[in-house]
Length: 363
Image (tube, rainbow, N blue to C red; front, side):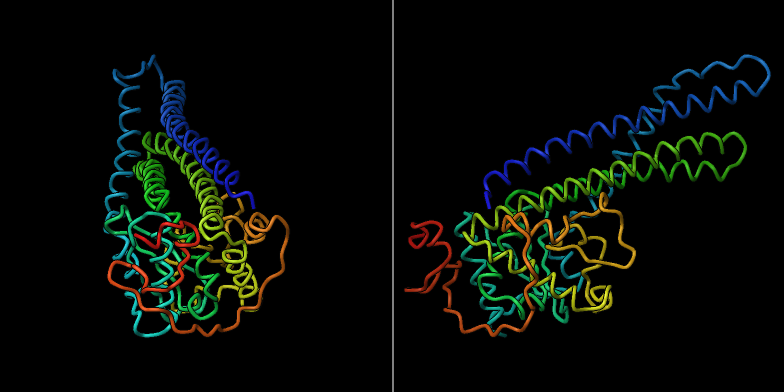
């Protein structure tokens, strides 16, 4: 995998899509004004006499549209600032307990090693118990409330190399600011949706308000749909970037690649929708776009609204060719060396950080 090229391409595509998102907001404001102007002209054609546009018609239309979009963005992002740990607890995650099992001690060590290699602060680590699906997510507005949560299935079915690939992918999202970017885009999409809802409210008043409300709804729906499409496209590019970063940090295709192939096998061998009915919070709307792999459902949206690339596409990018699924069978985690306070390995322990950064053992 040419991970440097993939990272460059993903960043370039992200910038292009974000520019498109900005243009979509501008086009929405113009479309709302045009739709209201058309509705006014149709009303003027039906009513007797000459009916001019009221004074400040343009300013009012643009001002209200921007107020709805930016106000909705501010409200939604304010709600999402509650913190990554609170979000993880809301979907059923608990704090990591390294003394509980070798698998959780292994996860703690891996996070420490990768954070040293990436020169980034250690996030809070959490586990989603009673969740058999292999998955994980990273959340948090900034370093102070960053969290990485993994499912019990990931602890049970992934070996150390694969767990390194999964954790590296999630740490990449934190390192690149993807969690903050996605929350901002989610807030903007919510603001675009408010324009549609405003038009729907106006339609309830009947009479002339029905015509103006219908015009606003039409423009608002087009803007909301465009925003959803662009948000999903940005999310897919950030997943490609995190995949490439995981291969770079771990120097292993079989790490993250093995995780994705085991997820393929798990979904092939289990009934459709099992993730929604496994008493887990993976299907919670607040974490859907943050997951390592999206939750498949019976009512799946069209591909251009998916927040994640398909597993086949991601595996092919990692290996450079198509690969078969790997059976997801329980893996016994052996004892891990204890780590001193601050994430430093005990004397004589070999870490991934020392393999990536030869001077990491002296930090």
